[in-house]
Amino acid sequence: LAAAGQDWVDVRADGLEIRLTGTAPSEVERFRAMSQAATAVDATRVLDRMTVAATEAMTPPEFKVELLRNDAGISVIGLVPASTDRVALMRLLRSETAAPQITDLMESADYPVPEGWAEALDYGVAAVQASAQSKISIQPGRVQVTALAGSAAEKARLEARLQEARPE
Image: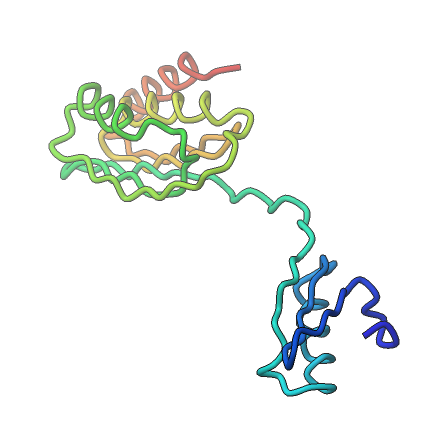
């Protein structure tokens, strides 16, 4: 193993078994050490007691929610941080929009809440309250509103309401 560049592996023989211990720099290197040891003795006699060094923290997922509203109700679809109070969000949508049905199709991931998430979510809820026919796309620090208006005057009222509710 040392000749193969696997000098991080500690090899101990115990009867007919070979124990490999040590901290592999990666899962690939751990597998290579196991394969190399299996060329010297039968693979069934090699016991893997190695660990793999911690890798860099995984990149958090892209949190995004879409609120789709029509006459039938509101569908909430997307990925939210696990700390998001989904029950409170559903309750708020029910009480503030009077939508006949609220459908929760969200998934959650246990990652830190990104900067701008809470503000964007609050603004998205305000936007869905303002329009009966809309698609609201919410991302940290960004909300995109697509809505139907029955007239130019209704469009102007909707734009004014959204501008007024917009966070800094």
